[in-house]
Length: 542
Image (cartoon, rainbow, N blue to C red; front, side, top):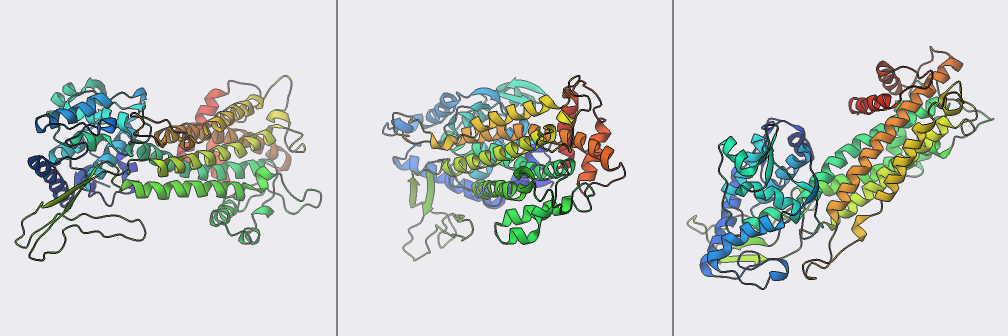
């Protein structure tokens, strides 16, 4: 992927991932010719409104509770600067570079649709920052998720006017200094531009997209870890029989059972039917039902984000229609597709080919409200917490001799008492699960009225996304701990059934990679370096 062409309509999940984790200018991001035309049309429409002296929210009025305060034409540019500097009140640690790059790309794509009124030169400067690796320092906290992600987006917008801080070429610099170093000049914001840059769901979309991408990988890892634990515990694959799952036709449950059968294909560590042990505990037997349901939440978040990537989420929006007595067709072309309801606004053209701005509407709405994303991210947070919960219970079963019926020694050590073995590994997993349970409380059910009660219901979508990020990080650690413990269990099983016995088709490579990093734990040793090694290994597995 050498180039991403933004048109406001076709940005993909994969393109955001590529831009987020790629080096500056890899891939290079540019605007399509259609986007340039759309952006120019909307920005010219804003200038027409000013020339006519019309009243329009955020252009010739104040913001929020100041919506009734009329701003003179002479002060409209100052108004836009003021919204950026006054709203840059974010706190907390800055977003990492991949998240910042995702934010910049998604915001640029939103503006490229041509409904926001931003000028082409301002939008292209934002892309120049992205392509040259000039990254705004954006604090994580401060957004209520309506009216969009105002505070953090203001920090992004600040750098365009030479204010605020950036990270450039490994240094943290004031924006003015970074611009000079890169040979660029700041812009002076025109009417509507400050509002266009700061109003929308960009922060929550960017964070949620990156965490949904991680969640896809964690779902795969959870299946692999669960299978390795099942082999260590002498579990059976009978509960994964396709006939069982066909009778409860949840598609991702069915698919998960299929994945598990494939992972464990050829394993000599699982048991056949045993009349003295006819079924396993839920944490092994119900992996398809639990992991499959969690995959539903991942799929829902993925669907929601793909819609949001090409949505226009600022306010107000600029609509251009034409009134042509010669019977020229209405210049506002609306094409609603059944699958994702994209809306296309073609610039008005008269019979002789010239653009007309006889009818410009500035309409206030609520597309900045993050409720759809907040609900999706809360749902996903709950699902990832559940993947952690069932993983921790498998770790408990690996370490508790009574729970595994003596298949494995207590705490996975031969000399219990003198050695604690994996006792505290399970403690750490339990601590992370508890933290996840607290974080899984949905942020979307909370709201605090703001702006003198004009903005009287907010989504807390950015909070949902940030909580999701912490839960996903904890889940990665929990699954790493399960792999660590399961590999130890496999070695004890080898001692009993023979070192030549084969693991499953896809668990064998994981076990081999774990053992290539560190050996079987014979006696108590410093454990955390091994845990860190497993965490690093995870990135190679999925």
